[in-house]
Amino acid sequence: MSEGQLDRRAAVAALLRDPGDLLVVTGLGGTTYDAGAAGDRPENFYLWGAMGAAAMVGLGLALARPARRVLVLTGDGEMLMGLGALATIAAQALPNLAVAVLDNGRFGETGAQLSHTARGTDLAAVARGCGWGRACTVAAAGDLEDLRLRLRNEPLFAVVRIAPEEAPRVLPPRDGALLHHRFRAALLGP
Amino acid sequence: MGDSHLDGRWSVLPTPDLWIVSGVAKHGASMEPNGWQDAVFEALRRARIRQVGYVPDAGHARLIARAHAEADMRAVVLTTEEEGVALAAGAWLGGDRAVLLMQSSGVGNCVNMLSLPLNCRMPFLALVTMRGEWGEFNPWQVPMGNAAGPVLAAMGVLVRRVERAEDAAETVEGAAALAFDSAVPVAVLLAQRLIGAKVWVR
Image 1: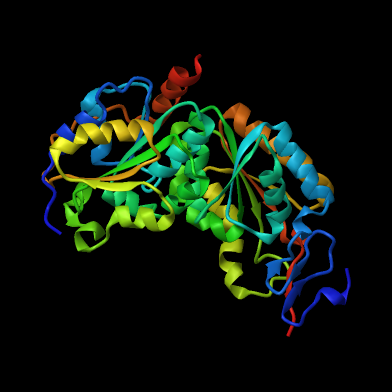
Image 2 (image 1 turned 120 degrees about the horizontal axis):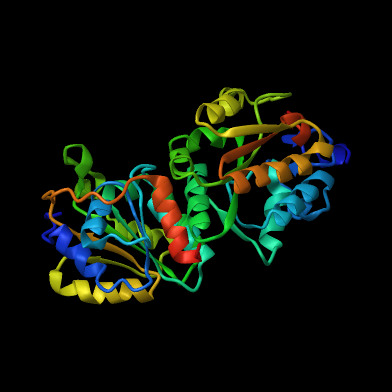
């Protein structure tokens, strides 16, 4: 497959525009930096480790807060480590959880080694095969606004094909206890 | 329960706690009242557990069936146990309490994921049915059964153990209070002798 062309920072900034009360979970690595660069907020829960956890953290959160929208934003490597979560989430058939995978076909944190998506794995097809009724792949900047709206309203699995270039590091807080307590305070009150 | 339940392939010791024929829990058996497992379920309910992540295990069959039948709980079948650690973290972020039900073999699958509740100082509660420690027929269960408790302890999880049916509910209740009130990870190991060893019959 040809390389993705979208700039990851611009894509995430577009998807997280006007977040409102959106609850966001990011996977370790690039998507945590991208979300931090788009604007740190207590309703962002950044994973800095526990690779493969992002989608399942999103599921637990979405089950707990059925009246709120939850968006999981992660990378292809992080999603690949927790592929089973796509089946687990589909089995719950929740309306308020969406997952967007920024796919550059690379393990960006460790030297940009090619990942499985650069070697033939189609994550949107995997999601469909796991039972997701709505899955799509977006590769053009002009489609990001439509994707933003869909991610806020549908139980959607989306692959966003980004360019492999690394973006400057923007480091949001990484103390897990701080991230946990500020998230719960913002969501549940003191 | 007599030999009529043995079909010549494998079954379990004739304890009233577990009823297995031909390699799968007999349909409906898990909905029959069961003293200590029902008491454990009531302890989870009193602890206000709302999400029950599980990888199926015969020793948890009654709890799983009751969780699915309970309106105030959401039972979530997992493909691997580590998903349940992340599920519990998400549940807690959203204000829910969760429990992870698994077999000792699943403990090894959870190890790195435990950095999530540990780093974030979140509560975590797991109930682990033990294999490979008493009357075990299948040698493949022995390595992880032997290591489950030490591995959990090495990760900083507080480990409690139930040997006798009459202690099960109280131990789980105490473990849940410890986990959720003190925001620590706690695992309760349910001894294989309590569950009933699986017996394979040729």
